[in-house]
Image 1 (cartoon, helix red, strand yellow):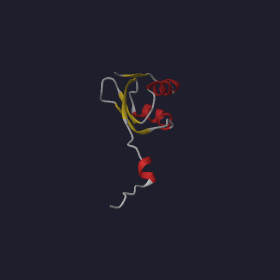
Image 2 (spheres, rainbow, N blue to C red):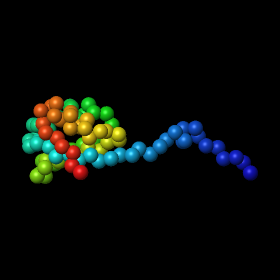
Image 3 (tube, rainbow, N blue to C red):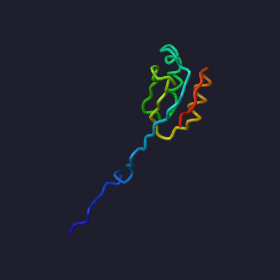
Image 4 (cartoon, rainbow, N blue to C red):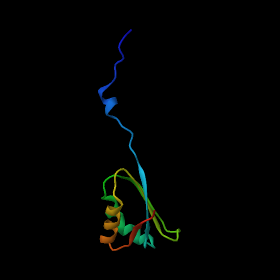
Length: 87
């Protein structure tokens, strides 16, 4: 019986655990979203994000791996907007 060969890189590949962070914001207009876009895009670990202006809470949803909700809140607050994680 031949031994099974495995690639060294195969053992290094691990599934990425993505989580969805959800925040209530005071973003009301597309212009405001445009102004926070560079701030959010500078955060590490974000695969995608959006703001739902039709939702009463103007919800910001972020898909990320290993991003702290406090980092998002601080980033938006420094940009001049309110941001609070929803549970």
